[in-house]
Structures are given as C-alpha cells and as structure tokens.
Amino acid sequence: MGKTTKPTQPRYDVLARYTALLDAGETLLCQGYEQAQPQLIADTAGVSVGLFYRHFRSKQELLTAIIVRHLNKLHLQIAQAQKACSHPKEAIHMVVLLTLRYFHQHQGLIKLFFMQVGYGDMAATEQLLSARQNYRNILLSIIEDGIAQGIFLNSPALNVQIAINSIIGTINWTLYDLLVVKNENLEPEVFATLISSHLLRSLTH
Image (cartoon, rainbow, N blue to C red; front, side):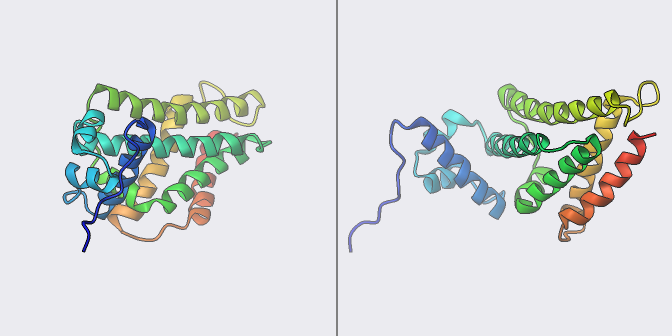
C-alpha cells in the first residue's frame, strides 16, 4: 500500500493556511477542549505545528480568534438586517433574535467559550474587546435613534450604557443558563420575543 499523505495548504497562501487553522481548531475544540492539542490542530489543518505557534501562543488564543471571527459574522448579519428595520423596537428585537439564532446554530462554540474563556496576549484581547465594542455600538445607534424619535426614554430616566449592559447581559445569561447550566435546547424565536418584551419595557415610556 502507498503511503497516506495528509492534505496540505498552499505554502505561501497565508490567509488559506490561517483559515484552515481556525476551521480545524473550531471542529476539534468543540469535540473536546483538552484533547485538541496544537499538533493535532495543525495536522488536521494540513500545516506545521510551527505555523500554529506563529499565529497563536496557545489554543486559548486560537479560541479567541475563532470567537472574533464568529462575532464579526454575526455583526455583519445584524448590520444588514438593521437597514430593513423601520422602528427602534423592531431593531432591538432583531438584534436579540439574530444573536440567539446565531449561537443556537453554533451551540458547541458558545458552550466552549463560556467554559474556556481566555483572551490570550494583548493583541488577542484587543481583537475580542474590539468585536464586543462593535456589538455595543450597534445597540447604541438603535437606542439613540429611539431616543431621538421620542420612542425610548431620555436621560436621566434612561442611562444608555446601563441599558446596553442590560441587553447584553440578559442575552448572555440566557445563553449560559440554557446551553451550559441546563444543557437544554434553545428556541430562538420564543426566547427572542420574551427577552425583547422584557427589555423594551425598561426602554420605553
């Protein structure tokens, strides 16, 4: 029998090799965090383990990069959907629904993130904080639009930053409670309606 060779990425295609590491890392980390060692991830991606360490100092940094990639995809979906929202209340519901729906589709990843959160070095931390800030900025624009239209409460009755924290916190705790603590199935449409109704009561007159 001939020698079996693993698929390899084009040597000088930096983006393809980096993407292969992210793809392999996500699959293996979700299958088992402890078992997903850098050598195995590199082998699965078809690159050298040395290349793994050129991009990431640890698998926690790889996890951060994977999370950032997914957050950016989610934010793009929300930004595109926001253009079709004619009312701030509709936009709030849309953000909640798309967030729950996205992580419902990637339950293994969000469970992993909650249980193995670790930013890595300064650059990895900054990337994750930047991605999270993008999400906050989307909510900020929606709330400010609602205030300008007289739909949402104004200062001092409404503290915008606390309102944003409340929205994000409610979504995160819902995901954590259902997917990690209770290990239950998430029904995005049902919970989006419940969460949105609760949140909007604190934003409106």
